[in-house]
Length: 321
Length: 130
Image 1 (cartoon, rainbow over the protein chains, first blue to last red):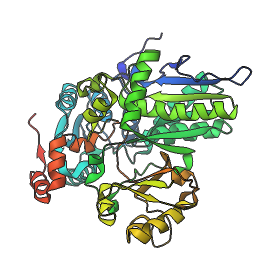
Image 2 (image 1 turned 135 degrees about the horizontal axis):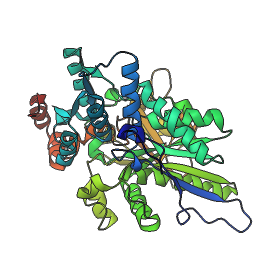
Image 3 (image 1 turned 90 degrees about the vertical axis):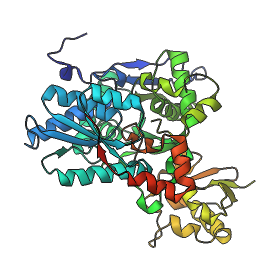
């Protein structure tokens, strides 16, 4: 291992580990089909979002948008908030997060522990409302810096400059890259890099499909697609339901000893789908997928134990990825 | 056998409240035309005036996004499952904002009654105690 001058310098450089037990078996004489997990839970705050947070803050500093003591504003209650809180603390900024008012107390505790302040947006409006509230607060505090991960090119660039090169270095024979589709930063950045370097690379998105309650209040005209999203970077896009995500999350820890959050289970589901297609077509495949974070933050959902139906019920109405 | 189509809550006014309806067609475009013959107006919510899929609508055939399968020309077979969903900011936990709806009961109340939803929104924003 290496030594680093500070925690921020220890961001990235995560291990890529093979999954010999979960990789599909191929018939005798057929080319190998292998699965590889990029362990992003090994980042300083335990998620892939550390990369984007660090790059977005550095980009703002370089552009002169952020000066010591400034306030950063971001609509998030998830991993990005935790990553930004850590980076802000170490670089000397104040962080204000906008999040729905009925988010879990663990999330609020974690953010406050890392030093973030919280502004709540109305629960009924969901994510669109949180975006709108953040934009409104941003207008009221023109001196606060909104990094806005959904539209910040440094989010995607973090993966173009780090995640992509790391993957290619560790797995020059890569044929598929599979990641989750949220802000789309991971897929856009890593996908663009790999498309430039690897002929025929397949860039595959796994999108969580939540329980109906999450979509229930949403009008189609109020939809939202992140500004960073460019469909031409992707080869395919899968929608993965709660049940499959939970099943794969459990399989990953049971079979390969990797304890991950549910978004990783959704990604693994898509990775297995393309791996099995490769076996069926008799093609060689090295499928690398992202382990976004560890399972610790989700233990309280109870979805790691009991039947799959129990787990599905436990996650109904929740944003589990 | 037919093609099973999952309808999001927001569009169930066109299907008499049905979550799942059956349809047929060799392509997605055919399927939507077929559905519209029984659920008038549905097609118009999914397709723009210029004849493309609405930007904020995602349609999946057997869990795969049709935009990568030929969009409205995507081929369908009997037994396929088609899911229609509104586009939502979310994913990789980045935007747990929609965890707004994480409390089952609050969401159910908000869905069942507009006044409940309004009551929740009326709380507005407040800076949390530090």
